[in-house]
Image 1 (cartoon, rainbow, N blue to C red):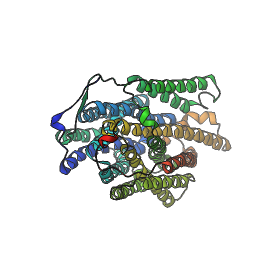
Image 2: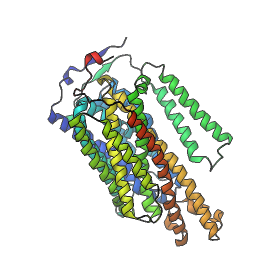
Image 3: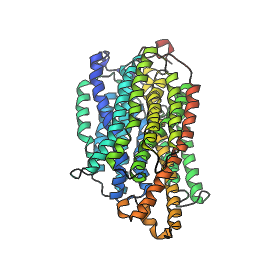
Image 4: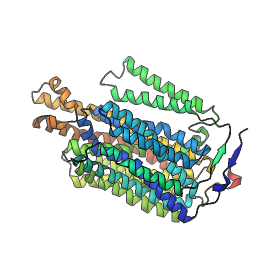
Amino acid sequence: MSSTTLDRAEQRPMTHREIMEALSGLLLVLFVAMASSTIVSTALPSIIGDLEGSQTQYTWVVTATLLTATASTPIWGKLSDLYSKKLLVQISIVVFILGSLIAGFTQNTEQLIAARAFQGLGMGGVQALVQVAIAAMIPPRERGRYNGYLGGVMALATVGGPLLGGVIVDTDALGWRWCFFIGAPVAVIALIVLQKTLHLPVLRRDDVKVDYLGATLIAAGVSVILIWVSFVDDAFGWFSWQSGAMVGGGVLLLGLAVWVESRVAEPIVPLPIVRQRTTALAIIGSLAVGMAMFGGSVFLGQYFQIGRGYSPTEAGLLMIPMMFGILVSSTVAGRAITRSGRIKPYVVAGTIILVIGFAGLSVLDHDTSLWYIGTVMAAVGVGVGMSMQNLVLVVQNTVALKDIGAASSTIAFFRSLGGTIGVSVLGAVLARRVSDSITEQLTAMGVPAGSSASGTGSLDLGALPDQIQHVVRAAYGDATGHIFLISAGVAVIGVIAAIALKPTKLRSTVDLAPERQP
């Protein structure tokens, strides 16, 4: 029988001023973690071009980060239910800082992918634990108002990241390596602020076993399937033995993960929580929103630079409509939810607008009007802003404080998983369509495709002749719309899940009433 004790010194509820002080540190580190992802979206074409990487490596620089963040998120969340939330936030910040510095010193794409994977461990902790800490400080009914701050910071990171990345790449005195270095000192400041301001109850339990086996099996299963997605129909065929081994192995590993999770005392992904109707539906919705948030920022940045020929700074500016939509909608919806206590209508509206935005992006080609692109990007932003954080809040409202870490990180896990799968699958589809289009156009021009394969496979367009550059830009511009059509189809599933949510009022206490706790 495990014993549970509470640090008496930290039981006193935080005042509003203390909450705002602690929130400033939490939001600062969340901004840095999110910006470290979005800052790469506009800088990545230049980074991969400079390191002489390929489209597949372009995708994996993003996927590796999301994959390790996804795999580590449930571990961070579970640990936060067992140990000091404050200490875990600080540890995750240190891991993030180290990963950022390592990424800045890499010399080739393989090293960069590995460094970004390590950085993802810290990012996963930061993104999960910030929400866990907020949930431990603020009741769900009041959290809607604070979610406006959260959404604003996320929007600012998503807006400022691409723009800052573009400016850094376009500044000769800096260069792309500063896209990774720049976040480290800000994260150190956040670490100091949190040390002084964050005071949370510490739940100490004996006989605790963290389910590292389950987390490893989940990460391995997802990794194998994503590697298969990246290379199928290129390095090997759909019905080859390699496909059978990878798909079968991935499914087997995930099946073993479910078996382990159903039997361990402290599962990484608690199946009883996942099986609840509200949580299950929120997970489905989060998968769709995850694909929206990550797929949109990654491939739109590439579209503007490679498909349209804009500079990294210009690409960052052109992505502002989507981020402005996130900022406005998350702030307005958060305050409205706090006033009414009702959350389902906003989630439903957000997912519907998300589908409309993706459907609008699905008609992109290499000469689509920028006014039109800005309008539909704003719609995508509004959809993400109204649904992303509120899907977490829906689940947090249904669980006791002792399970808040596991519940929050489970939703963050599946949202990040959606982003990981989305970036990997959409990147693979984009690479295939671009390759086919380039081959077709070069053949029509009388240029043997085999003789230029290596050249057009690189994202260093400056090394290509003008005529070939035009072919490559048109291929990327025309192929991007197709991947957003896929995103629109996935987002429809999010709408169905949101509609199926049970309407509930947000509670006005941090924890459930004693009689409702298990």
